[in-house]
Length: 588
Image (cartoon, rainbow, N blue to C red; front, side, top):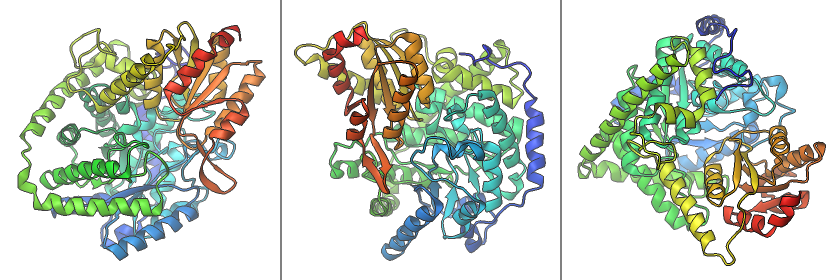
């Protein structure tokens, strides 16, 4: 893949090393803030506190939270902290889940489409997140890696954030932003700013499940990707780099083996930000009891691994309601109670776990990761990429994309029967789950009478936000049924989707959305259809929610239908409607 300029690395780019120097110069004029959580514990930075906790067998906890503004988020956090004090629970860190607009330059944010998550509008918001409450804030979304990398890094450092992410989000696209080169230039300067505060304990965070690693089919490729990012961060930029992971890992053995492999490549010994709870195994249609069993198992083994192999990473028990709604205060507190009990049992059963099978899988991932990492570097050099320049590496890999990276540089043996032409060294849970769910949908459709007839229909498929899993299942099912699928990928704005529908004369458009903007995105896309004179049928699936008239997380299924789109509770619903409407679709 190449950019709009037709090149893997555009001509005329500035030197990545010059950009790093520019960032370091900016850092020299910044004062590093000191967050309340660290002040009250007498440590200079969160990095130092994590190191101390790891050395004394202490487990720390973190939660995700991000309402529309800092005052709203602070009020919810106050409730959570009060409940934790009452129940003798622990919460050390909060990942302030940001609206994707935070990744845009400040002057572009108000006009962009609102999504779920927090917005920092003023310096008071930033400083309040670090000073108002006794909990350490993490900026893990839409900071470094985004077009606003520099602004967000400077604000976060001045306020006192210790871990600033998210390098893995170099893969993301942002609404209304078209220049991937400018996005990566900002990223490198932002990394330079953080590098300039390395002695103050400031760390570049990278939650890998948010980027390409969420879509890789081989855990060895995921490790190789982390090794490449470490090369860029440590060797080329000189910034303290900490990859973390967890939400896409369902198999306890794979999850702990991958964590131990990450620790092996952590040559700078920077404590990871966190180990996220498993979210992909939870389902909205499961009972809360079933989800509780999944969460308990996941957090038990994560804590057991941290006790046996301490890294300083905070742990995260996933709220049981995660797949069905934005967790409430009580949902979050409940998850922390599950975590506390799991920790008690993990401490009392340390000798019950034989880690040798985990070490064997770790070594498999390590060996494959080493091969894939060197294959990446060698292959990029052959493509003319200067692998000593951080900007060239970031923009080239962004343009290649996860699919091509794994096809070209993966460690597995060639085998055309696998989706990316290689046998995975250690298959990821993403591959296992997506393959199983895709086959489940295909099998369910095969039981219908009459069978759906959609072969030959041309469908443009896209995700309006960063989530890719549902899109992978959808495109696979449609292709298996004989549809011609134009897959635009994730983070695609309404204008680009409509343009693709017009250019390809699509019979239908399938839109996946998750980030709480289903009605607005549908409205915008249908407006773009109107501008182009399109009557293309629009299917909308995923999490069909949005904040409306002051109410949070409202089901907007009816609103989507009233706008003129077809809301779908499942892929099966979409295929059945396409089949019923096939004759009409072919004439549009």
